[in-house]
Image (cartoon, rainbow, N blue to C red):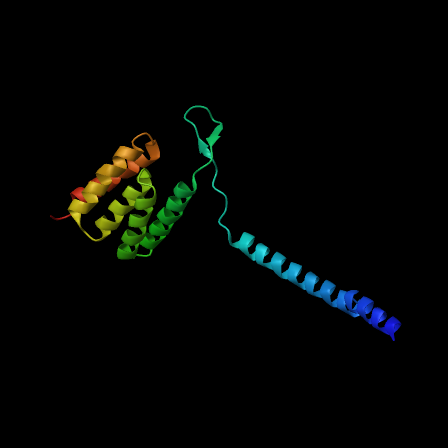
Length: 157
């Protein structure tokens, strides 16, 4: 009788083949689910943004901060909303972009554009002025700002 009890204790501690197979199968399934989630996250990520170039060096001097990247993403969303004629939505998005990175002159340019669409001359003029401060060293943006200023000037008061 004592021998039978000892065998039962040993067999209850040692997993049988069916238990091992079940655990292995569950482990494989869980690892596949984890990989699938990672793949879907990776595939939905935005394309990488190139690093900031230092003036005159041509070499990448530093990576963009997460705040700058978030602001740039919102700026792009605002630009798209403007293209679709949704000025009010663009203003809300661009306000968030400015609050995240107040040094991004493109936010102010597009904010001026949104107010220009709403025919609010004073707001458009102010945001155009701020955009000029931040983007004055960029010839492409400087010419855009001048053209935008000209369009603002012809708005009725």
